[in-house]
Length: 239
Length: 239
Image (cartoon, rainbow over all chains, first blue to last red; front, side, top):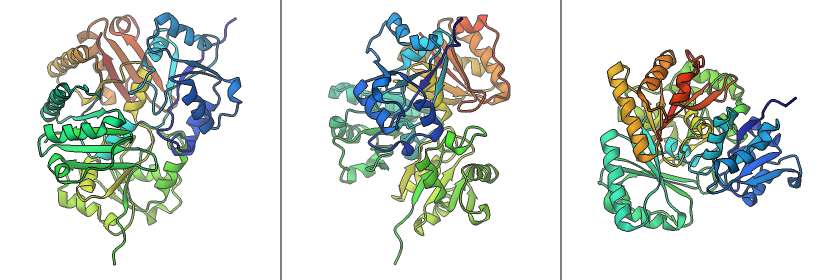
């Protein structure tokens, strides 16, 4: 006699230090609070998130297993073991939605390979919030991750994604490590066409939220906002 | 003496007939419930959503103005008038997040053109939920909207987005009108490579939620799920 398998529950976490009722629907929080077994990007960050969402069990009674950076199928299947034993399993990254600009997709893929049920909870994604608030095209968009760091490669990539944006009317979304944000903005102002619109979306769903969309020509005339150390997304739409 | 301008608040709405605590954080609902002036995709759907989120005011005391399909800048600016009078203004589409695979982006763009503050609330997006739950690549993805309806054009477009997926390791996300879902699935099974993974994500965040990711070869051997009249997203990742 074996129990029906559990469900892999994808648990979004906060984008900053905000209480759970600012970023999770009550039902999503309830679903996450009923889980005892978790696979997490980083146990320390996960414990802080579980405290933030007021998980009813003492943290020492929860199982938190780290997601390996490069796990084999066998290691990933081992992490799914609670599901086969009939328990639900939560998957959490350090911020936002697991598997979206964050680790987790390979574990989800293994769950599908075994025919297990996967259930995503509603929660915050900086990519989605930035796109909604940018006023740029939300009918056709791409998330490109990080651009190359070396200036010549980065500049070539900026021109390439701007060309694609113009050709397809596609909003191009990308991120940068916070300490490189200023250099990214300088590169965009130098490389892009004056009429291209650039949205800078910072500290989304947090106290310092700042979202500005201007043309490159307007950005060039303006003193740039404070950018260093602020989590930011960059979005461009060429005209 | 003029008041400080209000904020354009982007209000996500439910993906189906579910109570507000399944899709909105308490703080997002509180922010939306404090607004009296709305611009909406469709007043009838908006009234149902405002009832669902238990807006504290009688609906007849709320101003609901429809978003024109092809509004001029002047018409859009007229819709923003409550902001200049110091009131917050809510923007809602019929389902999910305004401006993302839904109308609203041009109104948001006008708000940015006037230097007005735009604040997106956390809520459900079928695109984001599908991507999280697909197990496909969430580091590089594109939303392509609707594919062409004419079979030859649709098939050519499918092959083109599959080629791009393979070249860039990019997850390609697209939608179809529910009554055409079966034909879209047949076309994908006929056009795509056997090892390409296809995720079908239906009725997300609703009672009938079904999310399946299989290779094209596996889909071809399987009886397809009931698809007609179910809101669905299609996601592919070529190997």
